Image (cartoon, rainbow, N blue to C red):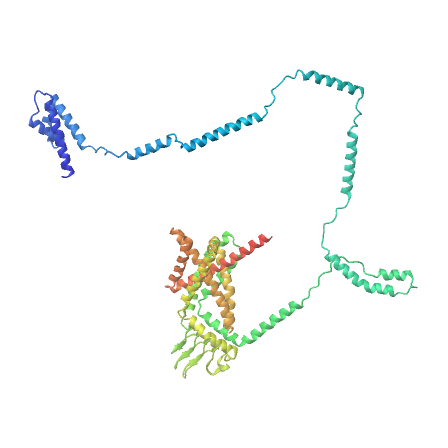
Length: 597
């Protein structure tokens, strides 16, 4: 049986009780079945208009009115909300019992009662003994008996003083005046005396004394060797010729021999280097010139604008210059990065680390760095053929209208008439044999993974050392100045490295290039950490310092999917972070200097 049926049964019972009440009340005329049906249907709310009018007309009878009121009250009780169910009062009763137990007087155990009784009796006995032992202070008494005695003693003292007066006390004014005058004279004497000089170094006077004694020895010997019959004028002249004491420190004499020696050594080493590399200088300049011919002229304009803007921002970092520098950097990047990427990626006629096979007619120059140039039969080159760390192999029937030059390599015939550089010998041969595989390996597809691994390792090292947040904060607070310093640092490293490389000094050139690569990787780690941390803070990620490092490495790894983006990120981010490293080091040194002062 569901709840609806229960409610209907309860309602029927209640209505039955109501009808029984109507009948038991002793009404003259009980309600008719039709009227009861109308009342029940009114309670259900399904009366028509006519039935409602008939019921309203019958309601003029007081019995019908009482029945309608009783029926509405019963319906309201049955359809209203359920009364609250009875709840348990056990918790409240337990709480009341605990409170009563706490408020009840504690019942002492017999042992504790006997102990308290003995302690109280002992305290009472001790208080009584102390009261007997202590003497109470005397009560106030009358002074009438002692007052006449004091008056008599005072009168006797006055009579004695009148009979024999005390000696007069000398006045204090003359004594004070004499002491004041003595202090004034002493002060005047002290002010007039010269102030003693502060302690000073005795090195100068000691050096003068030693020089005087050293110069007095010959004079003294001359005076001693003089004849005893010499006139006093001669002896006085000999003593007058002695040098006067010189306590001033003699001016230090500096020797220029070490400076001249070092300068001559550096000049000799420079001359030796130029002499050893002279055969390769012309070919290196030719290689550089040929490489530059593949670069658009706007790239040179962009590089010049980049260097000038970096120097200006570094020299005068005012707000107006920084705003101008931001626009100049963007313009220089647009002018410089696309041509440089084209050169690095390898344009027609230019190759890095790969051999070049020439077939047919080639209008222009052919340049190979770290690879050989192979002229197939029937090949014709209207320009020059230049290699660095590579050989030129010419098949029969191949023609070259320009010069053929090979730096640290071989040319066909090894003849100077062909414009070839002499074949490498000795150290140059070992250098060429050692660096050719390295250049070929670096030009392969493994360098992106190596660079990403190096950047990730450096970022992890900076993060563990705790310097990554400091560097990122420095880069965020001075973006234009750090970028300008980074550009100048990379220019100071790359320009000498390229000059050494094209001159044939591959060891020094590649060492500087490796240092520049390490600096770019370190700077890129700082930049991507700053970008990752800013992205984590923008996305409200937890632990932005740690999450930012992973986001930065993911950004570098993701940029490898598009080579131009990876190239731009490496150059710009590396320069930016390198400037941050230099500025942080300069700020740290300045802080240590101020602390030392």
